[in-house]
Length: 487
Image (cartoon, rainbow, N blue to C red):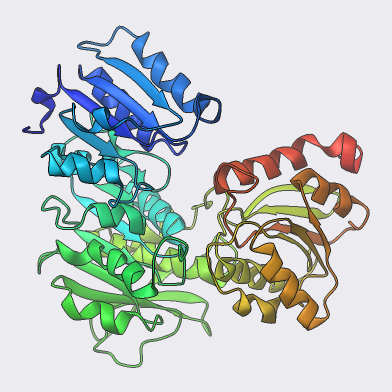
């Protein structure tokens, strides 16, 4: 089957994995609007997926030209849907080793993703960002900066916005920022259409070890972000990450680096922070120039994220003055060390996107460096294990004044570390509202409440975004029950 927009009407398309992040929904909506007969299949049941199902069904009620049809196969997969079809769109969370996908490929059925379809149907220049942590903030900051010059610039990918939501609206030559996970990159291996003008790798940290057999396989998927580039493109790597030395060996694009400290050699090109001067510098020739003077987000890791975004913008051609002026107003994004509420000299931070222990470490360090009020940290942490090592967290567990634990397979590892250090803790609690109820009795002015699980969320929540939203809702709506009237 030739895959082009003109060929879609009347074709059979199977969407494998509807999910709740928007990729499956956007794929279904796109092909329905363009006249395809769409089958949506997912191992989850209708009750779990109802919000996504409702969005798809609403498309059928709109008077859209060439609107197709949709059927749902939920709680199971049926092999016929992977054989008697013209095209399969897989969710990134579905491994290629799936017997259904193997059967489809054996029968010559093309398997794509929402990102690969976007890349086939669009020739917009792409800035791609990946990394274990920091990719969402970096990608969002890049998009924020681009909009000062390209107001119609778009942001999509792993940030829960499928590029298929804007593919029919975006103008030619307008840049698109794509945040890409390791799973999404694995699906793009060998894809001739994936050629980012600027590709960024923020860092490599242990993650998803419940799915990858070893770290090298995980790194190999991350490296795919550079594989389609050539000498006319730009690759950005973390100078402070030991993985960089091996990763850079096969990169064909022009290499640039970012670092939390000045470069040891003037031959290194990129951007660095000068802690003594509190500024970020751009080093593209022998003389550094100021790239960033103000950092609106808390934490050293966010200073690095903003610096990386500024470097990417500079390489794309955005003027330094414009970068400084626009990024100073960047407010960050939801679920990433998000200060969302202050009450009675108590601050509440939602850091639910912290799904590995290193992310929680950075959040603790960030709040520990705050001068004046709000110095005391109450940490809420715990959740589902992804076969990760929590030992690095051990050295930072003595910083919070109090620690409250949510139950989960990873929480057992955290409890062991706390006992080893002789640190008191509360819980583990079966529900998040129980954590907040327990915390109520201990709160006092000058506290920063940090919700930074450092783990996945599968045992109690649909995903980390659902987890963060529940936490915010409990805090914002629970004052009459938990804290009394807001002042």
